[in-house]
Image (cartoon, each protein chain N blue to C red):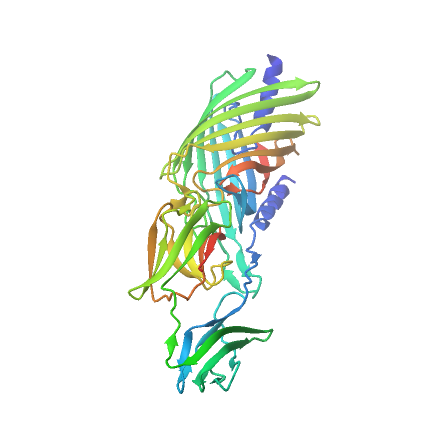
Length: 290
Length: 227
């Protein structure tokens, strides 16, 4: 039991590095929290089509500079905020290879991004061998969903969504190396004729170098219920297209520089998808525990 | 130390907010000389003013020096501005040359000299097949015809387009590689079956391709040559 508590504490301290999966099945202890300033970005000149093949598109980039925060209201109830306070998206100029003239000028917009506000509740007792939690998330459409001349530059999807996620995680030790695994399954109810989504994720992490370095492998995915409007009725593209689907794998490292703070970096790429960029995304962040 | 890291982090994040770059596309097409008012025969003793235009290597009209020649100036003489004079019965080949700084392009046609002037009967309609040039479903036949001064583009019953693609638009163009210089018909709202577009002030021979283009992705989806 003591061992589980130790590993759980480690996990609470270090796992909160992903905005998608949050702290997994481990809520924050009462009065404790986690704060992360990070930059996430993807730049892509190709996308997965509806048949799963890859087609070109004008080079488009999306950057989210965000604050991710967790705070334990009680030992079981944690508040979670993902707030992209500065988002920027751009599309390149399209230039004639024959004349050198700009055929379609590139554009860029910036502003707030879509924000997630969540409450996570620990179903199991803190320190349990298997940590189970449910999270209710409100997706607040703060991001501009129709920017640029054609209205196709987006900092968000423009819809208010509600998501319920269940997480189950466990930790164990092999020799002196702590490991953890977490699985999540969520249902995202979307409005404005966007299709609902089923979201899933698996994480496997190991803590190396005397609790200094977490190495995390991650598989995440989104499956569309296809119960909304077709993509043809909207201008949405990039990561905001309706009926988008993907399965991605990624890796993240989080290095604890000081006792309560550190840096993290990640790279994630889709191995299959529909109506989603076919290029890897990256992130870099500085986190602090309090 | 901690504050420095936070500061450096902020600087790094700001730098990452990237600038707009250039995507260069291959939009070259074969330049063509187009004769606008063909005739099949001309009456002895009369004159006829030919008109021609030049579409450059991106399919855009370009003003370049044109010159005309006749294969037999005893039958038909023609001036550099395209004025043909029918002198004697017979047949000739008329050629128009477009001179650009890089090359000379030409177009020829047969002309008979007889008892009357006959305008070549242009087809009253043209047709083609829409094909996908992407991974998105797009297929179907189409015709274009002039009806009461408007050009009507009739898309056939066998037409089908993917509804998964956002922002699909249809154009008429002389360069199927780009929407530059193309006539935007409008957003695609029908994704299966027959439908039509009516376009005012557009001639039957003004364009030689139909083009389907995804505006949000800024990429060509399909095209069809107008035969």
